[in-house]
Length: 297
Image 1 (cartoon, helix red, strand yellow):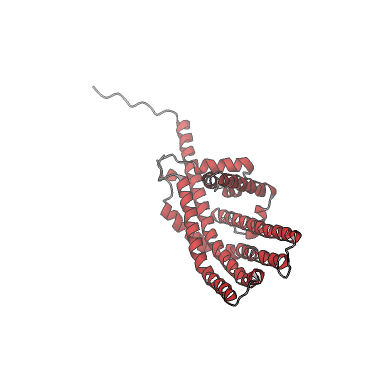
Image 2 (cartoon, helix red, strand yellow):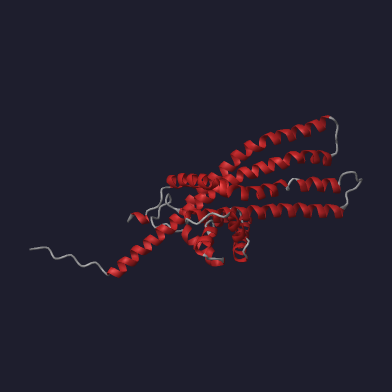
């Protein structure tokens, strides 16, 4: 097997992702981190406002207000999820452009993600993963790994819909060596797991002071005999907002690194597959190898 069909060592891939992240951090980070941080900062505001409107100062809660408040909470959470998904996709588009040698423009990344074909394909993938998670979680995790390269496929190959989903599945299952250690599914899982560990560890370190301050407020209110949960929630909200925003800023930095790791892995898989196909085509053009001459008697 020639060098073009050999996989990039996983340790080298991780190191290369760090280098590419540092090189393009300034251009890619803030245009995505700021909108995600603002959207996440709104999440704790909705419950506090809902409690103030539906519970504060009323003998019996108004059911209509409670329904409206619950709908507002769901709407804010959904908006934050959409902004996060589109922003993460924009990072993948930017990483794809960078690795292809194209000038990186996060405006193009955001606009690419809101194209009907791209957004529809992403929504299809998200729905499949959600349905899989409902069915005992593990099918959803498997589908998340299987469809992890859909966005790089759309950005680099202009494939959409079921074509992009099939292409991602084909690449992630491409394992000519046949061993578990060389399985692309396993490597994608490790990339996601590393991202999860980094986000959780750094996010906890960032949010811990705010969590401690919230608990102090709750215990102080209980010690003073306060029985108004809406008032306590409203006070604690102003600590949750900066905590959520800082956590989103940290998570976006980790997602930027994961984007480069995934796109590097995508190009490595595509290079290997195309190299193997090229070797097969060359062998077919050459025809069968001539039979060795008979041994001299």
